[in-house]
Image (cartoon, rainbow, N blue to C red; front, side, top):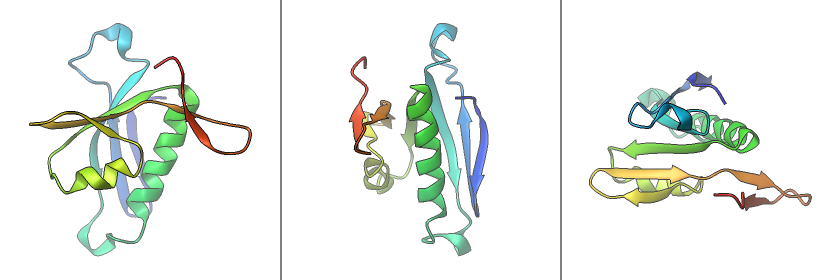
Length: 112
């Protein structure tokens, strides 16, 4: 999975290499830096679809995703996508890659 800007509908998402991590970890861990949807386009599913597509790519490439939640009510939104709090104050959340099983379900990769 490569860093860069992704978009779907009115939503945009910046995926970046985390500067605080050593270079040897850059291929397996990426940070979701900025998810943005203009106010007039919110609650239409654009952010949900964009995150679903980004997560599918992360799962395929076995990439861990993490983010800093600056608006605490958004914690529940990210939990819907299997992000879990790894630190409070500031709130950091991470999501390990999942693999799709033969029946279409998602299972946590066993090597994380």
